[in-house]
Length: 312
Image (cartoon, rainbow, N blue to C red; front, side, top):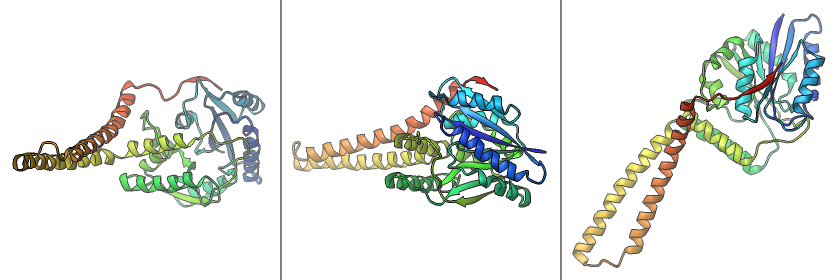
């Protein structure tokens, strides 16, 4: 009997956990209708929740000790760390990463499993074809994927979810990457292997509300670009070179005009504008370099991606 591990990150999701378990359990019952072929392994990750999320996890684990397990962090470390903890602690022959709010339909699991078993794929990911969200947020999301594809060798599919089913070999390959700064969508693509995608219409949350703010999404997007591309550094170098060239031309212009026209007052506004422009470009480039240095700093400290307070 093969085991399918389900990694389920949770942050203040007390209303969703039991709904998720009930819905997913029905899927496994249907899969095992004729004979018991697949055993579920639920691994809920409590990412420092402040509500009753951990209590509900413990109750569920006591009710189903053979199937349900949990890992609880000492504080909120973020979804990327939660997924990393799940991958490090899951034991399934196949492993899926799923959102507890049921926006990732458990009913797709049999289809994903069949594709892996019959079509020689190591990973099946999911792409949402439609989703109701803020127009500005939707526009920024679509532009992020275009920028990511343009700047990086890692091609991340637009609207791809973290929801995917992977073979054990695929998971073991992902675990070889130990970096502190993680952009899992990029990591899943970077490791290679035969991967395909299935599409499904966007689903509403079963309960609760999203914990992702616009600022967090922008920060996450920047993380992905920096983690998988050095193009911003090359861009900063190019801009710096052009700025230096234009500065030399501007300096020659000022000197020549001073020699031939003996006018040291006229033209100061344009000169000040040039100085401000160059200063702004320099600060912009320093900001790009600073982001990369910050990532190096965090990596060099070699801190753990998460701290487990308890697990069972």
